[in-house]
Length: 558
Image 1 (cartoon, rainbow, N blue to C red):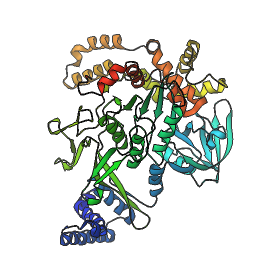
Image 2 (image 1 turned 60 degrees about the horizontal axis):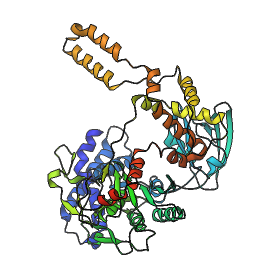
Image 3 (image 1 turned 90 degrees about the vertical axis):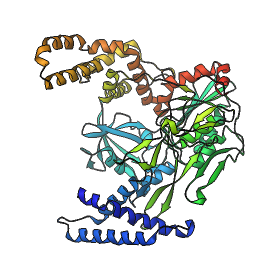
Image 4 (image 1 turned 30 degrees about the horizontal axis):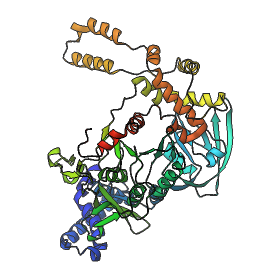
């Protein structure tokens, strides 16, 4: 079957392209060679008909065509996608942030799925469904062996309908919960609050409908605190979304009538300029935007525009580099296609797209824009910025990676499990900002994981094993075996000693996980403020306003 798809490679591309081109002919006055399209369409239809008739096994016609369409669009870029009728609802959620369900995040745990985060003020939390609860039955059907995607579909449904869950909770056994589904709205701003006495923090997680309003409302609420002197806008890990919401968010900090982004495409109608339409909330308060490598698309419009207009300082890591715009078009039978229709440009005129999908290598791979081809642009104040590779922060923060021990404890869910046990033993805790586990709690954690599997291999141990493998291949190992065993013994890590060595890191992780059991998603943010290296760097900058101002001038030194 795989070879069959390879044979269809160019034919099915031509088939679907003609659907798009013909449907748009009047609008774009295409000069495409329709004879060539018609010829390839006929060839494709002939191949499709012959395979469907004579292939040795039964062919699922719908699945075959879906695969062909997906492969065709994937040859263009990762963002041009086809949505079948069954997938349209999931796509709608990506745009609106709305769905019918119980309001909880779930994850795999052994043969079952476990609740990892109930959303505050939604059915799961209202009916006391807790993180750590194992879902063993939904409406009388066992969930054993089902993955999170399958369970999610069973939990979702029309608002107002009921779903009956049988859960297993530590120390309480099996419990039955009947929940009434409701419309769940995933907030674009899941949290805002004060980091310290003077600095506000707004976490922007998505760009669905009303993202701009949520950021605006958050800043207005923060400004009610007379001590507010600076603001952090966090778009780390935000993959983007609606372009006009990015404009609305920038509008919160930028005067009315300012161009935020422009777009250019093959079709004339996509040559547009997007300007701020409303009065801003605050155009002077010192602002930091936090970014990382997963800040993409609309996140880059926000961070790139704030940077180009010298409205604030970007801190963190270089962003993803997605400078492409997609639009959706309805197709027959309730299907849709999302097509890359334009590139976007920040106020300085740069496009931050990192990969050139129009020029592929012979093996089909896509290369990044080389530094030699990147062009220089100027911010409003005359600072140098560059295209072709994401938004570069004014202050780059080199993050301390998790220790191998911490990675193991997280992947084995031992920190998660201890938080579940802690919640059962303690009815309440202090606020998430103030909460820290005690040394006695840490000793309890060490006892809790004693005897449990959480082994890990250090970089030195891995290098040593690689050496052994290579030496054995080259038949030298017997000559150095004694020295190898001695070195291996000396390098072997002591898990108990490593727990003490990494005590602070592990306690920080426990603080966040435990606090979230009482104060939900907002606790994960508040409990991490002290250990978040990007936030701490922002606070240091706000404490030195001369440096803040200098970073926004052409002579700024990074």
